[in-house]
Amino acid sequence: MTTTKHDKPMVQIIGVALDLGASRRGTDAGPSALRVAGLGEALRRTGCELALQVDIPVPAMETRKSDSYDARFKDEILAVCKELAAATEASLDAGFVPLVIGGDHSIAMGTVSGVAAHYRARQQDIGLLWFDAHGDMNLPGTSPSGNIHGMPLAHLLGLGDPDLAGIHGICPTVRSDRVALIGVRDIDAREREVLRESGIRVYSMRQIDELGMAHVCREALEIVNDGTAGFHVSFDVDGCDPTVIPGSGTLVPGGVNYREAHLLLEHCADSGRMLSMEVVELNPFLDQANVSAQRTVSLIQSAFGQSII
Image 1: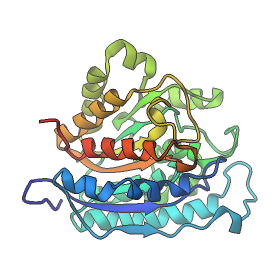
Image 2: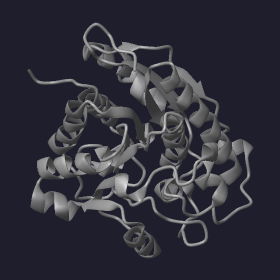
Image 3: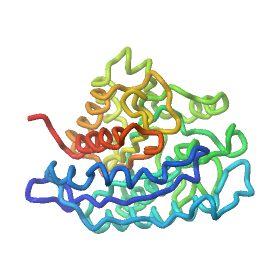
Image 4: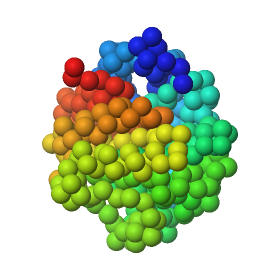
């Protein structure tokens, strides 16, 4: 990992303007919203330096037609995820810390595959901290919508479609006992069965309410760091309460508040073991004067070491 004179990482922002995995349009503008909100300069203020930014080419929905109802736009999403996996692996190979900005959550199949490939080449595994209001454990054929943004975690665990589950030739991409899912509060009926059978550690909003976010952070970090090189953070903004982040297409009331989200990411930074991060499902067309992007930028700063004192 390349670090600066402040012992902060050299960050490479990778934009993936993908919204093919969701029904509601607009997450393709998420990367632009974060950049307009000053993401690059905000990272510099934390002491990070920035490598040359990268964008992954993504086809527009209007130029494609999906013939599958089980996994809509599978071929296009698979192609994007393969390119993203290669870019993420190359970023780590160069000594950077990849910060992937999306886009819908289907891009995680590419991001995490690239991170896992980099460390697998060094005979190491990674942990995965997944922050989300949803389980993302649907499978083709059982998903109510066929939208792939509801399936990425299942595929990273080696379930579902073999092509989506084997990006970069790794299957499963992560071990279930090294995954922590935080903030979940909206699970489909069939998805619940898959989630229970998977063996991953789930911290629903009830656990957060009863245990407190600090306790959840400590337990989750133990899980994702146990026997690993470190962990990837997959941060879906809809894990936050809609009063915090209104600009997302799959809002669920009763979520993590602003201070709790900061605390989670501060713990990630304090651990010194965050290998990479992605931020997904920001939809500026549903936002209020880009406030969601501005707050998300602030949360990203916490993940990269911004502190009060």
